[in-house]
Amino acid sequence: MKYRALRAQRLAALNAVLWDEEAGAWFDYDLENKKKNGEFYPSNLTPLWAGCFSDPGMADKALKYLEDSRILIYQYVPELDPNQL
Image (cartoon, rainbow, N blue to C red; front, top):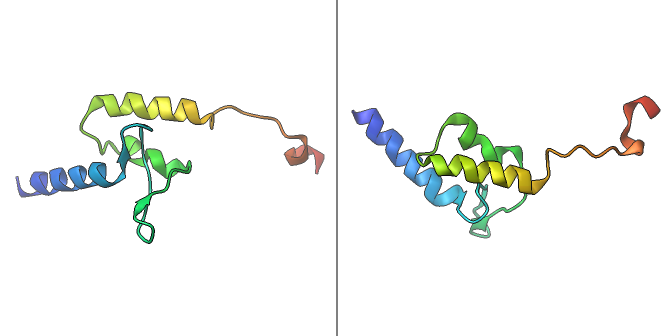
């Protein structure tokens, strides 16, 4: 029971500080500037992978964030082709 309460507290803190409802992702928090870092990093979706969210709708929003970021779209760049080096 004690550990469930601690988990719930951490989950609430994680979502309160890092979750961005509008964007649909968990962003790193910049302590110096006291704001979220809105850049894309794979860690923005770590809570999804780790199951650290309580609302199933967050998963849908995170998927939309991933699609909107276009990070999954492969773009061929000839200069970066390892076969051409």
